[in-house]
Length: 365
View 1 (cartoon, rainbow, N blue to C red):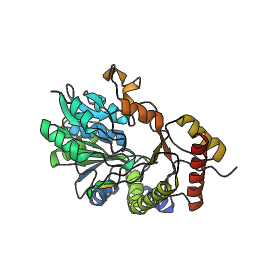
View 2 (view 1 turned 45 degrees about the vertical axis):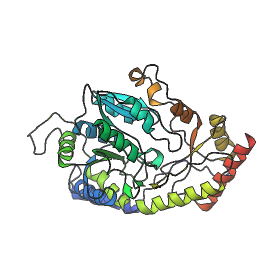
View 3 (view 1 turned 45 degrees about the horizontal axis):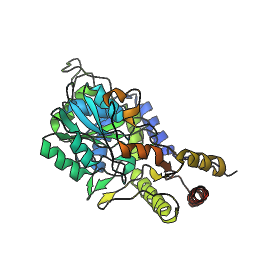
View 4 (view 1 turned 180 degrees about the horizontal axis):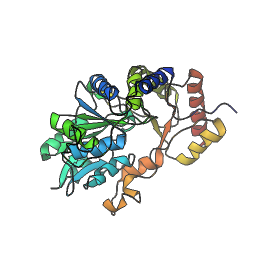
């Protein structure tokens, strides 16, 4: 049997190890100069100089971003159900209610028509997810937000460098969150970045991440310990110098898969969109789980199913959505499978992925 091709593979090298050693030698390991430098560099790299606040996880970034934007008890925030549970969790953790809307089938992102139908007098904001690295329908969602006088937020956990009409994700909403988890397009080991549209949201986020204080012992609000360490920031700063090349490789790998896969629905890219392929997600309409099993057992090709249980059916979140019917979300949960697209793939790996998918898809036809 050939060597297993994993669906994702974090890239951590000697540069990152040296950066960590540098911080450890300095003795300054908590939130310090490395975090401040990482925030400044991330801001310029990804969000056109917007204020950026580093935190200890992507989920903390969503939670604190929502709180910093004034979301709380009695509010509703419209989110997709076809996403990782952190999206809905973060809304619920503020005391607000996550309202789950359906997705449109091409991009797996929020369907503007479903969002419009979900607006109520309690709606505080709309939080699309730029799922798998493809930007959500921000033009249409912004128009809906403006029409109803509600805010727009962004879950950009998987979308570092994605853009729409040349405008980077993370610059549309009142705040946006980028995840720095090990399997994302770049990592700090663990962490998240909040991109803020204005100084007030940025300051609120800084207070909330650090026990409610900017100056020691002068606690202004009830806050959290959601600080990023200098160790994590040092890793992130190194990764920031490499992420563009990795993204270009992901896009090249995706183009090869697009051109050579048969018998499955490959991910479309909408006009004006820059897809960064955190995941390369196809649709398998007949026995997706059998397809995944055959890829692994017969061809040693890994894949991922993100996400088999929609948020509105999870035991933790279902009580927010009794009797809710989201047909496109349910279909995606049955059909979506993500193939390896990460930068560590060799040309031989890509050819093996193609031959395996085409063989399994052909056998099922």
